[in-house]
Amino acid sequence: MTTDDFRRNSDNFCYRHPDRQSFVLCQRCLRTICPECQTQAAVGVICPECLRDQQKAQSPAQRKAERRWSRPRAAAVRDSRPIVTYVIIAITAFVFLLTLIPGIGDDIESALQFWAPSLYPNFFPQLGGLPEIWRVLTVSLVHASFWHIGLNMLALFMIGRSLEPLLGRWRFLTLYLLSALGGSVAVALLSFPTPVVGASGAIFGLFGALLVIGRHLGANIAGIAIVLGINLVIGFIPGFNVSWQAHVGGLVVGLAVAFIFTRTRAARQRRLQIALLTLVGAVLVALLFVPVLFPAAIIG
Image (cartoon, rainbow, N blue to C red; front, side):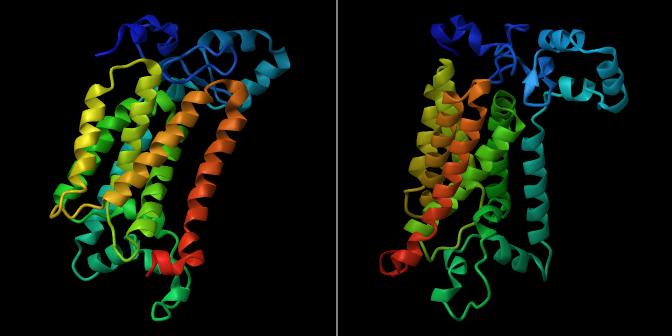
């Protein structure tokens, strides 16, 4: 269900298909276009009308060069599937199956799970080696059980098939990875010695983004807020063995990234959007140095 403001605001829907909600703008005319109406251009995507205008303005030599060297556009224009969502699910499922193989499964899980002390071998000489920084992201690939991966991937599928077409594939992937990083950073700061597995931090980031973007578009977000609240509270209930730190970290980052997306939609703000997202990533990486600067407070 949506609010009256949402339905009345034509900017929330494709100008050629008024029944299709979208979050992507034509980079030339700045009108909202759905995946079917998007054509990949040198920078971003453009609508069919701008594409025709661009082709009309070409010289015969330019048209000949485009026919000879350009890739076919049909597949990119028509493909509205949430490919990134499917790829993440497939990779996560593959890694989970690897962890079930006797003899090597436990080693794979141990190498990919997030364990904060492995980032700071100088504080733990028995570990040796270099900081295992990859764990801040690979934690989202390993899960403790079929139920664990099943619920996380179901949530990713349900949110991703709606959110990815709205944001576009690269924005969606950026949101997922930064949310996963945010979950790991929160665990390192708030529950340092605890080993953690699962994509919950990234999933909560998607939940947070859905809240912000839904609110921005004027949608009724009450249902999303209730589901998010229930899942967040579960993490604080003793006995559930859930990392509430990862949930909170992913959620905060997801809210921040979505806020950036909603405030930098215009084509002229593309560089600003990239700069702000880079800043979010830099802040998260910087927070990983807090245990180095204040070991007594964090490590104990």
